[in-house]
Structure formats: structure tokens, C-alpha cells
Image (cartoon, rainbow, N blue to C red; front, side, top):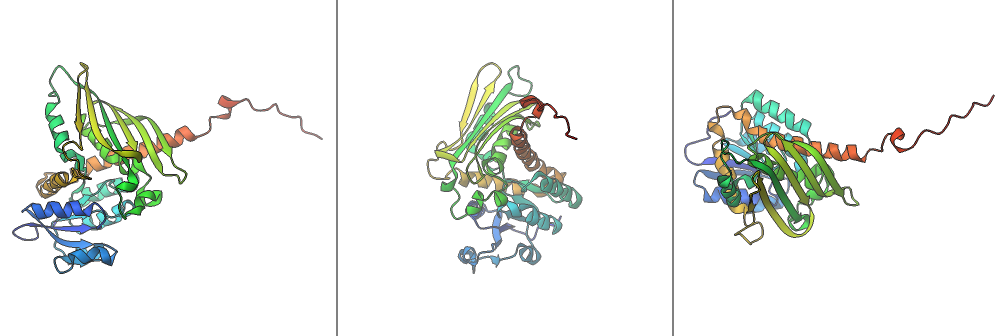
Length: 335
């Protein structure tokens, strides 16, 4: 991994100037430890607001070569995550990638292997981990040695996706998004289940996925189970409004909850403080004893996405013929 670029603020590069990039830019401008040093987008018009202030590129490889950067934010469409992340890791630049880590689990595993090989961290930006209501809920959970334990966690991620994507229409292209609500909102929700169950591994035990006429998954209900307890994730891309909340049930019947949008009624208002939390953790990546561990959360969420789609595919298979009806009696061959 390359040493810090220079004394003073850490130099941040941003690849992809879509709807989410503004939260990184605003966070970096509010945090004295960061400065946006370079941006990259294929669209010249997306670069226009940055010209004359920071280095502008239309190719992420050129941005990495121009360096030096202390970290790269990868906020390109999902299908390009793996390529851009891999190029940054090979250049020795720590990565903060928007969820999902990659388009599929196989690419995620390859990124994890490359991170281990190069000793360079790649962190998935699970911004809800930094939500003030979620952090307050964490503080209310019983200690590991307490007689009362967490029994289950339910996460709801409900929104009308068309109201959230701006000009980033690739969200509605399964080939570029990786699917629909499961591929894109699923990782955030699955990560919250992991966070609240003590980072223990979970597996998909049931999944119901509803797709629209174009084949995009618009709703899903996923049941998880693991040593830390049960999880339930409810996703909806067709919800009239927006709900993002968490309910934790303890084994004595107590329920604790967090409204992730609470206290911030403005559209996407909660994201401003959450992305400051993301960049605080990105700044700390260089201090990790084992940088390759940073990828684990992103890979775990991606594996759960793959497991949901696999469960959906398995449930859609026709039942074996013996389970539906007997084979017709064989007819004697004519001679």
C-alpha cells in the first residue's frame, strides 16, 4: 500500500459522479482531514462543476496513474465496481466502494483475494452503520454476557426507486445493477442484520422475490438465521413513500427500534451525516493491522444477495415429475 500522499489533508479521488457522489463531496468539504483531489466520470457534463478546482478525468486508470491518492471512492454503476476496485488495489490505493462490493459473489471473492495479495483494503460503504438512530439502538442492546439476548432483527427498506435514482437509470437495468432491490438495497439491509446480531454469519433460510414485467425484482422478503439470532429483511422498490427502520426483539419479549429517517424529514437528509461516518472509517483504513479484513462485510452481504437469488431460482424450478404426476404407462412398440 502506498504511503500517505503528503502532509495535511488526505487526498480523495471519486470515480463516478452520480446521485451518491454529492454526499462524499459534501462530507469531505466538512471534514478537515480530507480534500477532494480528483474526480472521474465518463460524462464531460458531470465533470464541469469541478473544473478549475480539482483534477478531472474521464478514465479511472488515468486518475490513478496521475495520483497520488490516499483513497478512492468507487461510485460507478454496479457492473463496473469490480474492475475499478481491482485497478485501484493494484495501484496500492485503498478503496471505499458503494454497495454492492461487486456484481456477483465470484467477483467479490476475487477482490477479496486481491486485497489480501496486495495488502490494500477495500471497504464497502454501508452508510447506515453510521446512522445516529442505529448507533443509539446499538448502545441499548444487552451486553454479550447479559442474561437477556437478542432474538431477532427485522430491517425494512421501502421506497419508490424512481424517486431516488435521479439520472442514474442504470439502477433499473438488471444487467448493470446486478438485479433489483435485492442486489442494491439488500446489502445495506443484510449488513444491518449482521451489525445488530454481533457480526455473526447468517444464511438465507427462506426468500420470496416479486419481479415486474421487465424482470426486475421490486419486492422481497428474506428470512435469515445464524448463531447470533434470526433476521428478517423486507425490501420494496414500489413503496409509495419511504420507510427505513429496524426492530430488534430480545428473548424476554422487549422490542427496541430505530427509524433511520427519524429527525431528518428532508429527502435523503440522513445521508449527510452518515457519509461523514463512512469517510472517518476510510481515513482509519491505513491503521488496520490486517488491511485485507476490511472486505469481509461487503463480501458477506454479497454472498447473501447471491443466496437469495439462488433460493428464488430453486423455488421456481418445476417439481420433479414424480411429485406432480406419474409417467404415462409405456406403450408397446409397434412392429
